[in-house]
Picture 1: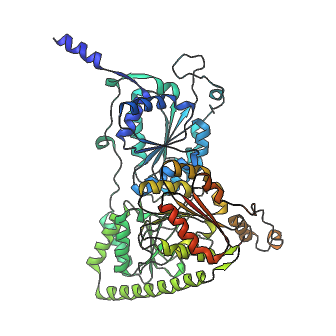
Picture 2: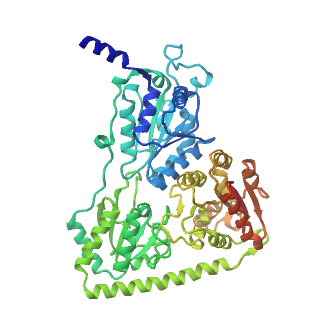
Picture 3: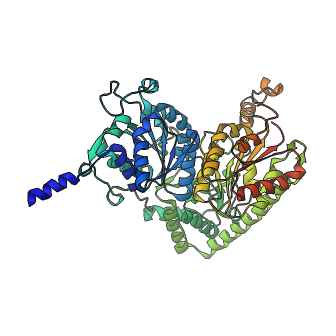
Length: 582
């Protein structure tokens, strides 16, 4: 009887390919979507996917992306809105190279995405299933494929055997999902994917035992030290870049600022607090030299040292999951006190300490500061309105006017992906965002992120309008034909506004800053003028979308209304706005 049971057990111990366990492992680590640009290296995975689909088995949904840049940023946009890391599958070294710029952005944006790429087969004579069988297999094997993205990932590895497929995926997930979150990279040899293993040989690694880190609060003694500083402060400031992606952090920043009379600077990445909040102090830390106590809360670049000069006597406390910034060789910002942990929890500790120690005098002064901040905000908004008052003229439309008009049409929970680069401040000034997390920018240095980000955001929030705002130079970088193809294929309509100034303003401004009295400036020769008389509407129209070229400022609101009507009807729309020139 015992021998019979053993015999049946062995018979039932089915064998499957590594690709089979790979799909199981993706399910186990919670990957919902695979954003794919596939190639010859993925044959075992594609075969296994077909088998699973035929059997009706659950696996990550596949989103096919004609360009890797779209895939990487789409995964990032979905992770940004949901907090859940996703997977991207690309083709060997070539696809990895195309994805590299996107990984740079994900690292700087603290977004968890697992980039997976095949490698060229390592056998040449048919020794193993998956051996080399086409020309490209001999030219797509560089000496060090991982080096293409190594500066931009928290972890990289090559899967050596299917027997540890699930262990490797759990390891990748645990690292990319731990704070500070960021991308990971896994290489998959084709012969390894095709190899077979018994079910009893491949084990699962549950999150309960092999999961992520949990950022904690701070030492109470250090919190007490900081609270004493704040209680004595006369001109405190809080600068943040990422904190508001945690709704609890956004709420506690507003509560702390109101209680202690702290000016809050919202710097790039995402609007971390409501921009109608009275303590919101704008986008740049002006009058930095007057600050006596400052809080740097989840921020990479709090100010430009060449533009804003801090006071050496200012006491700076840094609250961040990543206080030392090891991904940046140099980080020249002061921090008298570094508190590493979850900002929402640390700020809550700080607020509690302040409440316990606050005197009537402190409360009076804090209330007075907060009232002054409210007045300053009102004056700032009046200044923004003046910038938008002039519509501009034919073919020279004022971008402030366009963005202010757009703001009149958006609901408070609609989302704006702002990649206007040198004009990035324009949408921020003119489009009121009363809810945190509803204007998103790319804090990385790689242009061309917003299209994929917009698609990923739309995938996560299908009921909201998603607006992408770019310049013409950035529009080219976005691989827009791929963006609108994905939009059409998967029913993800977005509204793109191209603020066309016919050139690279960033290039021109850089030369002017470095050589203000130079020859380039004197002769208006900056090598920054791009093709004129382009019609970007044709790109969206090729994918069945609605396009409109705006040259008359009087038609701005009507054009925006038509575009949004198309989007809400299920088609992507593009408004090509001819703005004042470079």
